[in-house]
Amino acid sequence: MQDSKGGNKFSENKDELRRFLNKDGVKIIDVTIETSEIFGEIKAELSKKGSMIPLNDIAFFI
Image (cartoon, rainbow, N blue to C red; front, side, top):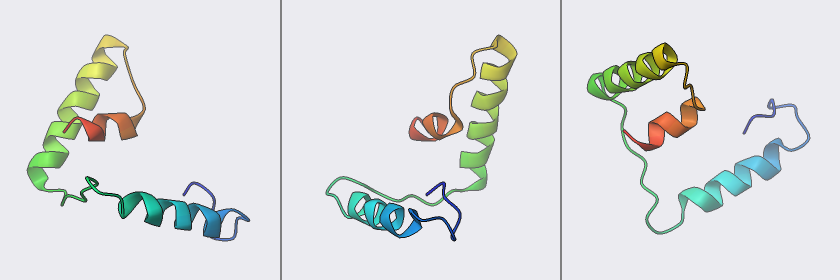
Protein backbone atom coordinates (compact mmCIF):
# COMPACT_ATOMS: atom_id res chain seq x y z
CA MET A 1 0.00 0.00 0.00
CA GLN A 2 2.76 2.40 -0.93
CA ASP A 3 0.49 4.75 -2.82
CA SER A 4 -0.80 7.65 -0.84
CA LYS A 5 -4.46 7.58 0.02
CA GLY A 6 -5.05 9.89 -2.91
CA GLY A 7 -3.15 7.61 -5.27
CA ASN A 8 -5.04 5.95 -8.09
CA LYS A 9 -4.07 2.43 -6.99
CA PHE A 10 -4.96 2.82 -3.31
CA SER A 11 -8.28 0.98 -3.57
CA GLU A 12 -6.77 -1.79 -5.69
CA ASN A 13 -3.85 -2.21 -3.25
CA LYS A 14 -6.20 -2.27 -0.27
CA ASP A 15 -8.28 -5.02 -1.89
CA GLU A 16 -5.16 -7.04 -2.69
CA LEU A 17 -3.95 -6.70 0.90
CA ARG A 18 -7.34 -7.88 2.23
CA ARG A 19 -7.27 -10.93 -0.05
CA PHE A 20 -3.78 -11.78 1.17
CA LEU A 21 -4.67 -11.37 4.84
CA ASN A 22 -7.71 -13.63 4.43
CA LYS A 23 -5.65 -16.54 3.07
CA ASP A 24 -5.25 -19.68 5.17
CA GLY A 25 -1.99 -19.65 7.07
CA VAL A 26 -1.60 -15.86 7.19
CA LYS A 27 -1.43 -14.72 10.75
CA ILE A 28 -1.26 -11.16 12.04
CA ILE A 29 0.83 -10.94 15.18
CA ASP A 30 1.06 -8.26 17.81
CA VAL A 31 4.29 -6.34 17.96
CA THR A 32 5.69 -6.29 21.47
CA ILE A 33 8.63 -4.50 23.05
CA GLU A 34 10.59 -7.75 22.70
CA THR A 35 9.73 -7.95 18.99
CA SER A 36 10.94 -4.40 18.39
CA GLU A 37 14.16 -5.06 20.33
CA ILE A 38 14.91 -8.16 18.24
CA PHE A 39 14.14 -6.21 15.05
CA GLY A 40 16.52 -3.44 16.14
CA GLU A 41 19.29 -5.89 16.97
CA ILE A 42 19.01 -7.62 13.59
CA LYS A 43 18.92 -4.30 11.75
CA ALA A 44 21.97 -2.99 13.64
CA GLU A 45 23.95 -6.17 13.02
CA LEU A 46 23.16 -6.18 9.29
CA SER A 47 24.03 -2.50 9.03
CA LYS A 48 27.35 -3.06 10.82
CA LYS A 49 28.20 -5.82 8.33
CA GLY A 50 27.09 -3.69 5.36
CA SER A 51 24.52 -6.36 4.49
CA MET A 52 21.25 -4.47 4.74
CA ILE A 53 18.14 -6.13 3.36
CA PRO A 54 14.67 -4.61 2.97
CA LEU A 55 13.21 -3.93 6.42
CA ASN A 56 10.05 -5.87 5.57
CA ASP A 57 12.20 -8.97 5.07
CA ILE A 58 13.61 -8.67 8.60
CA ALA A 59 10.09 -8.75 10.03
CA PHE A 60 9.39 -12.15 8.43
CA PHE A 61 12.19 -13.76 10.43
CA ILE A 62 11.19 -12.51 13.86
